[in-house]
Image (cartoon, rainbow, N blue to C red):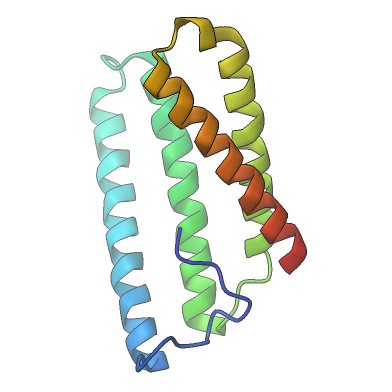
Length: 135
């Protein structure tokens, strides 16, 4: 997800709003193309794909749809009122899922992966705290 700012129309450095929106349009096109390719792939190969993989892909598609909605709102209206709410919900969900995963699997994980996962959880907690202050 792009860097979070209070006002999404603030431009960093020499970037004009036109340049920022041009990059947003490019990102939107890329997301829509990925979404479309994945939909086609699911339609063609869902009968031979593992159920867990299908669940993962459907979640990825849902995230892409959220990103598409976010970019559309930024380009069309210059803001996305629901962005922070959705981000908080997503981070909270990921925190919970990962905590459950760690509770059940940390004894089977290698030390490096365990450490990185715990660092990621700490980063999520920091992100959550920061987002709650911005709302």
